[in-house]
Length: 260
Image (cartoon, rainbow, N blue to C red; front, top):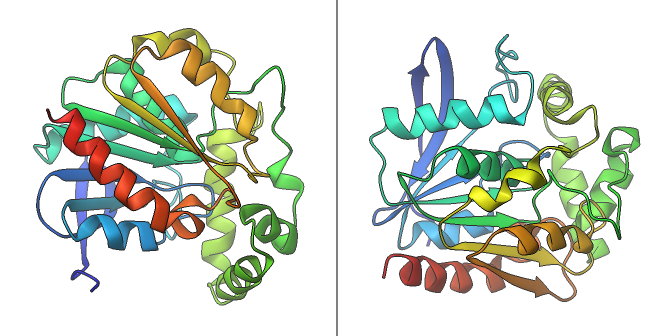
């Protein structure tokens, strides 16, 4: 059963942040990916036993890009302020794609309020064995096709995306460009600082990922001391949708282990 989802807003040093919240229990902060803010099957599963907070990144949806947001590191500092403003502690931080990149940037800066870090096919790091393609060159059909292993899920997701207000779609692309335009979807500096992540970390990737290639997990695993890696067969990039049934139970067990 889907928990009641509340829409909330908070002001963080002059920037208004819209977020959704559902459930009760240990707190999970979920940072969305390049597709923009959606309440996914994974968040439904997590909110059955956890308090789930899912913000919409500044510059996405109907919010203008704030002048201070020039890269993923800026957004990481912003969310560290959000965590403090909401009084969150022993927090399970989960990020997908670009949200995973921002989550990693948060963790290299400050893990004081974090209990664990989960990165779902995060952007942010390229591998010697695989480069990241130009997401900004894809049309809606290719963007959907690359998100999923199952073509039927891709077609259904594309149909839902087509119903969105065009202003929201364009704003999402603009917000993504501010974070990930040059270089595309990664930071050359990030791999150098991953060793600073000192909390239990779980990396999950779909083996059929055609947005952030599976091989991109290698630098994360090499540099993060407490990292574990899980790959999901027959699963693409849209892990909160296509991988939700597998990921939900794994995250619950991981959160429990991280809390001791």
